[in-house]
Length: 431
Image 1 (cartoon, rainbow, N blue to C red):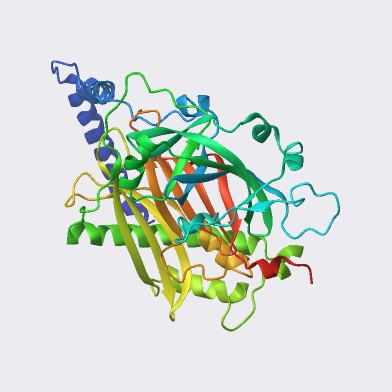
Image 2: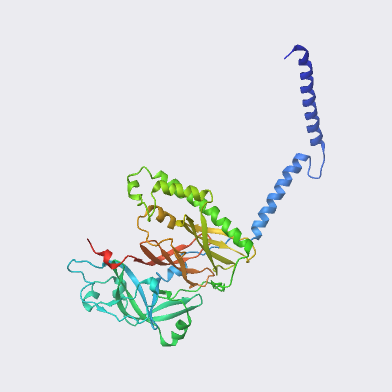
């Protein structure tokens, strides 16, 4: 810097500092009701914080069901399916032994008697149309729950959210479930309750050894499906946008895990055949990049339910994304919607089927249709306003029917489930 300019720079700096000091002295000299201007800013922040805390204190806390209260006290819940117009069947001990075992001394396969099946098969998803009655010798080797349950014992059958009834144990049964044999019971519906069961269009229920105690106070939330509920066009667009956004998040998470495991010894086992089956890891990554760039085609459906004490509809979405007419991503999601015209809020999502597509060699018809998960029935056995959902899930080579407690954070599985292999009996035989 030239010597002749130094005095002007020094003068400018001095003026700047003088103006800053003058402004500061002026600000602190202002005598407002709260003191000077800095005190006022501090008091304003304190006031806003107090208002926020007051609003939080006045607003009711978010409610979620307490899993393990009255429902757990009643013991495990088992999936019951219609066997004929007057009977239901349910399994209490799955996977007891291999269906086609050639070992000697297997007690389940001693001399069972086949039970006549109804002319019209009912509840096909459960796969319990083929039943056998064990002989008296085999009963001595059955699990305790079977030995302690006697013909004529009364169990409680939940038919709908507001309907339950006693059913009478008729006899123990053996049921082939895929490649395994399971043990359960055939129970009869009392004649005085027959009309209530006949009036229900559902084929899948829940049964317990004793009834569930009611919550105190009981909540009347009118749980059930809302078949006529339809979102507006604007709300549907918002649902699609949220589904796509969540899908991209899930794709990034899944790919990060796949790439992290790419160098492990299990990498070769995770590769898929080329052609009509599933692509290999690199091709999945390429497909997922297309999804991330919005190249996939979204197909989804919606069902609306009333499942919570607030009475606001919850929307169950089954979504599928395809590339070149091949299914590449599956996801279910739950939304909350106050009305058909308000913006739905995405509450939870499950993309576990997409993991199966990328990791399993045999996924069967998984993804061919939007039936990879279905709500079969709704209950509120403890009358707390939160629904229990009986859900059928398709995992490719197997299917599961399980009871879940609905929460806005996701479905919570409840103990026993009914799982069976969807493969043919011939595939169970050793080569």
